[in-house]
Amino acid sequence: MTQEELLPLVLKKDDKAFTVLYDMYSKNLYGIIYNLIRDHEESEDVLQEVFVKIWKNIESYNESKGRFFTWILNIARNTAIDKLRSKGFNNNQKNLSADNFVHLLDDSNKLSNMIDTIGIQEFVKKLKPKCIKIINLLFFKGYTQQEASEELEIPLGTVKTQNRNCINDLRTFLQV
Image (cartoon, rainbow, N blue to C red; front, side, top):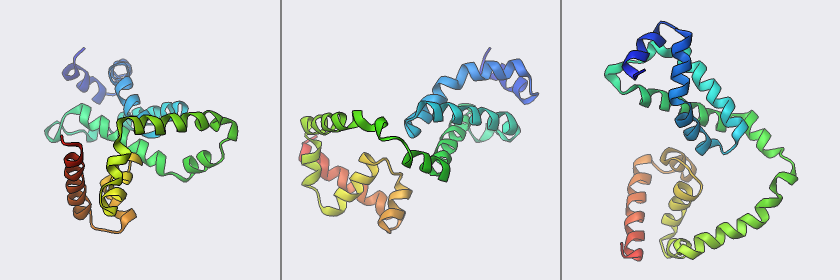
């Protein structure tokens, strides 16, 4: 079944169409969610929540505003971000048993070594302090530009400009 055939059926709240919709898009949406949350069980819960939102809000999809996949992708991304920012999720992350982190002691050294083997840290250290802060937030800590703007207490436009300039400086160091 094509997306064009599927959408009218989903709009009519056809159960079989919803199953097809899930089969078509669940793996892609799960991948987006998992990349943000980094926990399989939580990602599965968010995926379920995403499909409930799609089901309940399908009437709000407007084909003239964009592709259907983009619409559901934004629902998945926003739901995952909401989950990350929720108090319950943050508290669960804080209350994890130390047994869950034993493997990280070895892995953290491996990660540092991997980053060092490609030499990125050394090049980033050569940048201006403001560039180091921005690159650490945006690329190593996964902040959005808006979040970096709030963290650094500078305008969003400044973050975007400085990020672009810092990447250009990094390219110069790397001679790329």
